[in-house]
Amino acid sequence: MRYQDLLSAAAVRSQSAKVTAAVRAGDGLFEVHDDALAACAARVAEVTLDRYPTLEIPYHSRWRHFAAPGVTTLERQLVERIDALDPMEAARTGFDLVIPSVLLDAGAGPDWTFLAPEAEMRVGRSEGLGLASLDMFLAGAFADDGSARTDATTLASLSLEELRDGFQVTESNPLVGIDGRLDVLRRLGRAMSERTDLFPNGRPGDLVDRLVTDSSRTVAAPVLLALLLDALAPIWPKRELSETTGVDLGDAWHYEPFGDGPASIVPFHKLSQWLSYSLAETLERSGIAVTELDGLTGLPEYRNGGLLYETGVLSLRDPVLVDRTHRPESQLIVEWRALTITLLDEIADLVRAELDAPDMLLAEILEGGTWATGRALAFDRTADGSPPLHLDSDGTVF
View 1 (cartoon, rainbow, N blue to C red):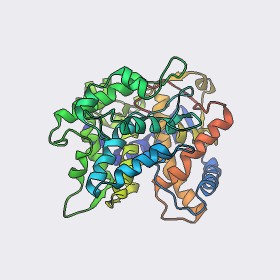
View 2: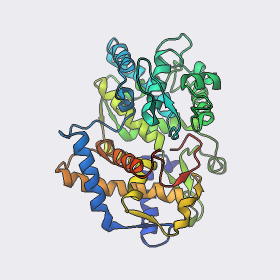
View 3: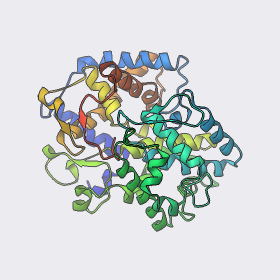
View 4: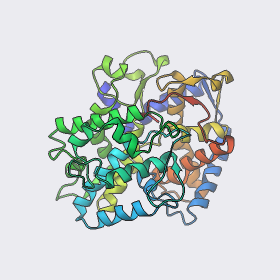
């Protein structure tokens, strides 16, 4: 294995499986309770049927957050904008919106909310982040000409004050990791300026023309992810791992029990994979087919991981660890995320059987689904819906 081989969904799945096998053998900080998997899957199936009784389930995508309950103005403006364009330009515009919007996610924290135009209630969490980024996009905050598009120069020069204003951040309305989010957007702007082979017009939407040709209106999801991992490699914080390997590995982490070298690295690429699901929907909205969606993995973040912890599929061998704060590079968080990848695949099979829906995509099960159940269980446990384990996030991982 080479370090470059870690830049794929297949590597996420295979390296996570190795961690899961080690934990199941008793060599980790967690314990896996296989006898709890069926009950967990049944809970997910119940929530899925409650949310989508006909089982017509959209992907777990950023597009869900552009239509938050009680907010119609922004969604209507977006639809009107895209409907007025030809299919390829509609896809490009969708990429212009979705790519920075997803990169601005990674968790809001319990105290931040956003008040959308004409809305009666403030919206928090991922829905609020999605609406805030959509509002900035439609207002022309990401384009030098003030239009609803995104260009490299504007992102590279975006100020903290502009981002704080767009997200309505104040001392009483704090957004976790806002500095990290701004840094990612600026890096995206610089990367687009430098990679003229991928971004000849200096906009995220240029990637559509790399994916879609006149001879084929079909895109394979793993190919989409591979392009994103290449195009976005420079935007991630320069963590120690990338410095020592010489490869921009992004959301990938050393797992100490596995020693050194490429085989000891566990990649997750959470934001890039969620971005892939979101861009897959963007392409399909423009009539471009996306195949091999199950070639991507589940998303290793605290809602899906929390589902496993809250339903007793996972427990800590040393309960004192639940009261400590853990960084993304810690063995505990790497294990938790790797276990989430593997066990989501296992739960997905059980959910398909429970719902008699053998062809249900993982992206639909996540939406139906595992993420919503994990969030509901978190709010059952605590008023602010915080994760069951304490995370020290820089705004670019979770």
